Length: 160
Image (tube, rainbow, N blue to C red):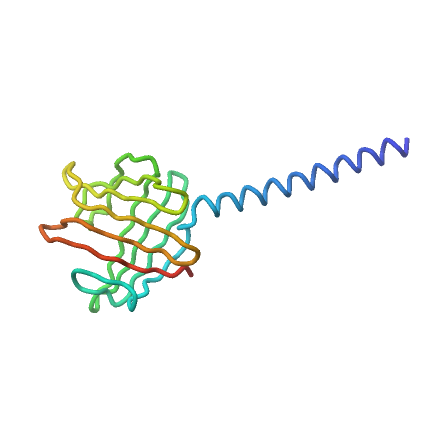
């Protein structure tokens, strides 16, 4: 009888260890698969803009029930602008924030550390943004025509 109890205890311990390893592996895989998740702060000194340079900007990517929420807060002059929208990485169009000069955004994965966003206005692509992560640095490259103005930027963000 004691041999049976010992065998059951050993089996339970091994199952517990296996479940712990699987959970850790899932978390590591999720972090590796989505390196842009989290909060990022603009490095103004190493960024370039075709227009006005924001005084402060932060971006947050977070998983939510229906996809990924992207929030950007920008301080320009004495006004803080906050833009938020939810998307999935499937190449389909999702509604942009009503304050954006875009109707929809569509995201696709270029590789494990790079996303590409196509911004559309009335069905036409007017902007392309690439989000590329290397460690704790994200480079965001933007090109397009928004509100009739040519825009381009290379924004460097540091992960918080």
